[in-house]
Image (cartoon, rainbow, N blue to C red; front, side, top):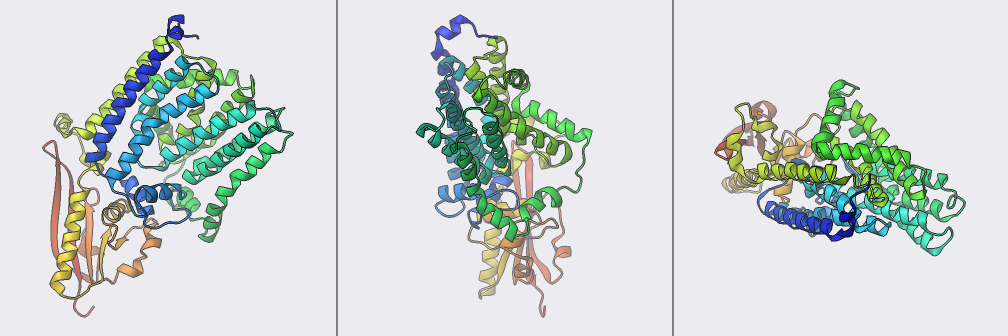
Length: 501
């Protein structure tokens, strides 16, 4: 369905709207960077910078390199990290615009799809966080752009050699961002094998070999650690796994929330057109396989795993806006304009909920602050300062150097403590394995002289019952208010070694 002629004649109208949305998002993100802390997962990724290694239980190590680089070799502060992600997330729709234009799309079509993507909550909100998903988005789109140009180049030409090589490197490095990036390797292999022009040349296959090189380090690490990441993802965290209607509802409902309803409709329409045009040319074939091939295992995983997250489906969807722009599929203002408006409104609502605490006054009586993940962005600076002060006072009171530790009952607490106090020794008392089991094994802290045990109201645990050889010397609370309501309460317990223990 073609866009109206008047819209084609004014290609900078959509670009102007994209500039306006970009400036607005950048301003909001810069403001957010100044006032919010790490989310629990972000805190864990910040901790990666304190323990450089090829892979971790949740992800490969590229996010560690990113965190370390912006943190000057240590865990970055939330403000520094979010300033960096604010700029990268704001620039991402423009990279999509450039890729679409470079592949031959008209300005109006490139601006239209970039505008939709920029407004979509999954991008407008999700990419602001310091997560592997931000890095994967750039690498996935970089792969699509360079691979599409490579297939369009003359076989055996220097241009094809260079572009296929870059595409191969993008695919390999994407696998260092998230394990999902590994799915680009079979995408490259299938699209080359199906291409009549390039499959008989050496460069595409050499590019596939090049894509394996970045993965080698992670593979060696996994073998040496008995496939710890694989076991954590598919065994340790899957106690309640199994195909269910609940998982189906979470998967489908999650797309409606993360994409917004009208954008989800656009996704279906463009995907249907991509299916019809999957063999129209080499680039359409690439877009189809980069969409369909990764989507199958990701959907299967979402249906099976109770802990799967809706945004895991996002990378394959990146092929759709590029294809839509190149084919001129604007679907008229009847869908694009309301899609952008609704998506932007939902994204704005999320930012407002997080950044304006007075809105909590309008929350229903059933509101439970423990399940509102926005509350993890506030309060930890006060809690970590209180824990550090408690530990320092214990040292001063003893008059000697003590073996002193901070300990939490969950990787979430431990990550926030370690990210907020990079110089402190942090242990983690969990039943499910975590990275802290390697960074600070239990044998190193369970017989410490002093432990400050930190928890919050999500995990109301009795410290005395957990530490048999220690006794409680002091206990205190840190209460965080947002909009006049209690958002989170932290409990800090100072435990000291029993006499004669």
